[in-house]
Amino acid sequence: MAHIYTVNQTGECKLHDYLGFAVIGSGYDLAFPELTKFPYFPLIIGWQDALIRVYDAKKVAERMGGVGQQTNLVVLNINIDEKTKVRTPVVWMPGEDTFNVLDRGIERLKKTEVETMRSVHEELKESLAKAKAQAKPEATTATQQSPKTDSVLQSEKVGSPEEPTKT
Image (cartoon, rainbow, N blue to C red; front, side, top):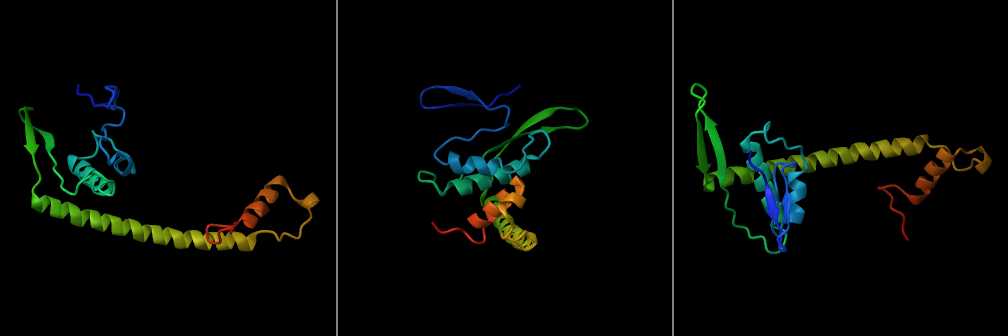
């Protein structure tokens, strides 16, 4: 069985089998969250999904200093003949056409993500407005309020994401 290790500058080894992947380099801080944004099960998702995720994480990591725009990818896979069960290793290096497909696909994914965020933002805004309209007025006396009501009123005084409190 294969294992995934990283070795840091001091020579310390770390096992990453529990994730199914590892991230190294100066773009680590940006690439890792992109790779962990969605569940990853190496035996369930196909290598194509993994390729899209890795390429997307690399493109995001380019925002960090020291991560260049040039990308080299190598896909290592195994083909299994259904009849003979013979395993044949496959090594593939994507070309310009593949990178163009990946760039267009990731652009569509990002656009969908932004559109979804806007939609959820509007739903959240409506929900907050509805909750605020249903809240009890602050004129109630402290002796009539439960601890839960106090915390609701306190949070309204602090402000909501739509109306940040100025300090």
